[in-house]
Image 1 (cartoon, rainbow, N blue to C red):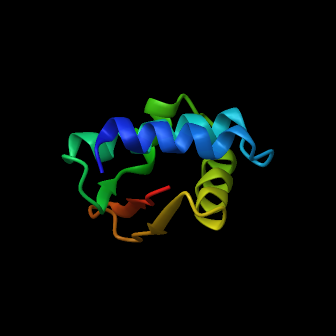
Image 2: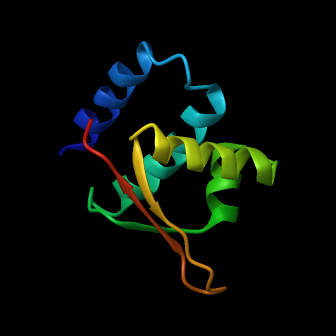
Length: 95
């Protein structure tokens, strides 16, 4: 899927989804940026600190809640890494 289609489909999907907040959108956009830099290939290795910085999210609780909910709502797949060097894996779902 092309980046423009991915982001367009995301915005179409969230338009009528009352569960999505600005924090969800901000984190998704940060994840989308990493996915785009990975040539639109899944999965993407991410660093929590880098995603939070890019998304302008300062609270760990907000980050974890939004990642969990984006997964529950079907926007992403997420495989956490508990290794200090290896990043967690994220897949952007085709919407």
